[in-house]
Length: 482
Image: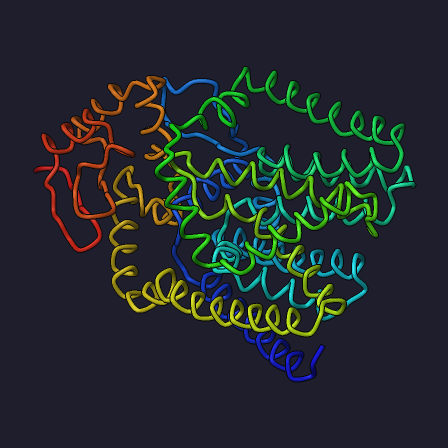
């Protein structure tokens, strides 16, 4: 490859990593929640530390809360918070930050193992960490980067040590950890491991599948029994939100806009290796088995982004897979004719520049604007703290402030709102509490009380009947009438 191209790629790799670090650290140290999903996980960690159960089997009595994910992340969250003494929110964010770095290293090691090309490995890291969805999510107290880290660790072990029973056992533990961090990881990682091992040694594959599935379903049955059905209700039944194909199309368009060249490159590489596989001329069976299977599973998980309540985290697996394919594509530049090599080099450089530009815009939207308004957030947090000393506080977008004020979550608006629309929760009891002015403050994000996703009509009517409503920029403040 031309030295000038290598130099440009080197500069863009460094800039991508710097951009990742700048934005992610800015999110990690930001004192308030950036994403709604951080607050429930903070609350779950607090409940673990206070000895309360995570998975309620019914929602008849308060608190009206749902634990959407298996227990691995909340328990790690709670233990590290207790041991480190870090603020609760920053503890959860540090888990994601460290997990994203380890995931990037694992991706680089996978590409290095498949290509023996360090430049391809570093470009893989730049594409992964430089993606706006990755560096945004890497700073949040969410489960996704930890699950991805466990999954990639298992794949790396399987690539290098598939013939060793001890290493196979360790890989099964990592896959089990990924599944019990985020249940959707039951697809891509296990599928890749199964297909890869089947191509190498069918007996080991069968034993490995048993090593993974028996503990997986055994743990599920055990936890579900201990929680009297609450585990199944929380992580499966309560997650069956309505699917919207329009949302899937919208999210897919945004993703394609950010990564057009990488997605085209991935598609072409997949087609090339499938053709090689059919011709039995593959030079690396993991690419044609494990990596293809992981990509297919990641794509399947990504397509569920059409579910209401889904977000950018649904793309993390496919981003990891596409980063690997792009690293492989860069390596294969060495065997392409001159003009094709030049075209791909220019396209890859343009993609990295486009990522940097998109990352800057994304960073400005997600975090820079919040730092600019930090005074307003501090004022609102003081108001929540004062109200929390007088009684229970309800909120949706500002639920994290309620947890940081020392209160447990009493009502999880989005999750319960979806259960209401599904006919699985009756808000009557909570509406009666609102009419009785049981809550010292109710904060609703946005500029209207009418938020069907989070506040059923009965609750809105109760608020209007018993609370003074003040509309401010970005929040509706509801205080009890005298």
